[in-house]
Length: 92
Image 1: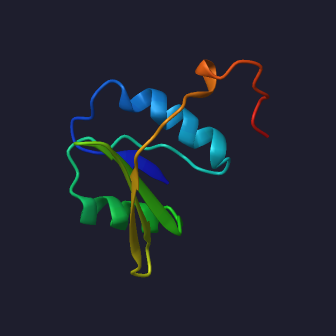
Image 2: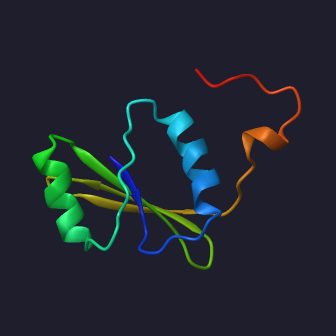
């Protein structure tokens, strides 16, 4: 399951599309006004094993949490969108 930060900026949705092309079996659920703990409970009730939270503050960050407890935070320093790469192939 993937979601975003509270009140995400508009540009986050372009990056979300790119992430969803990489992870094919991911489902996007809008965060609305839920706290992260509530998001984790919601995901567990839907039988997801991981939750990814995409956020943008001073750069892109991707939080990945295994619902059994482990959490990893990835800071993404460079993004090249697929539409800006000439002669690219479709991700499969």
